[in-house]
Length: 313
Image 1 (spheres, rainbow, N blue to C red):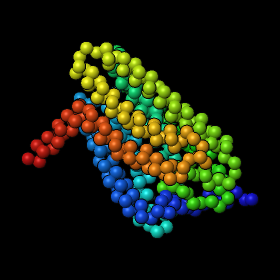
Image 2: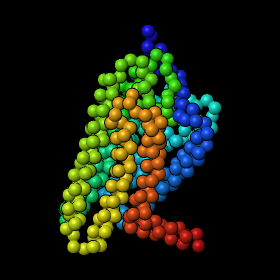
Image 3: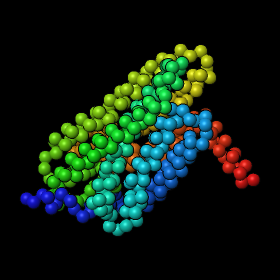
Image 4: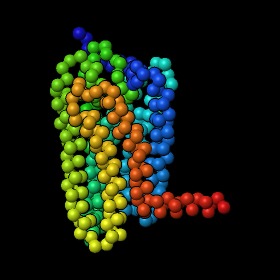
């Protein structure tokens, strides 16, 4: 069989919820609202963190990276999904699928590592407060952020290459909303056991190991917070750490369900719903979680609004 001519089709058909057309309009509304909120929420965090000198700290530097990541994360998939929902033929070009796969996978891998770095920052701030400025200096923060982005994109190029070069034997209907590794692996017409094993190994590196480090960090943080004599200090520590823990639970929980099991055993419907959750809903919720539970961020937002109102007057 000539696999070379079938490896690079002109386009893929994204089935999504084609079997349930009545879901398309509610899904369109949910996606549009979520995407709009995600764009404005994450842009607001980036803007406020840049303009307010009080927020020029490692914590908000990493939070800015997370907001930038979420902006790109949703933009790589949602606009194409909105277009397809409104179209009779739901397609994506081969080049568009490749770009979507690489970007989505790269940013997802980067977020796994970035959330672990953010927990390390909180660990140093609470457990080593006197040495915080010395340990978390600007150069280290830049190196840690750069390592997260570089590792994420390196993993994406590697996995995307393996996935895209799998022979499909003419199969081009992707039972998903966007191009993702588990969905594309299901198109292969050869044994994918080795690919599933490789995917599992990579997910252990990018999901379970960072999650274990996060849990260890928060174990030490909990001990340090409980030893604090100041009720205000405990409340502030739990506020900043609680926001991060909520984000970690939402992102890692959905990603582990989706990736740490063979694609062949993943329920198609639940796989799609979980992908929508960690790919669209979580980036929308992140700004709300960090702003509603963070006193400094709320104060910075109020200060920015006051300055804007003063300029208008």
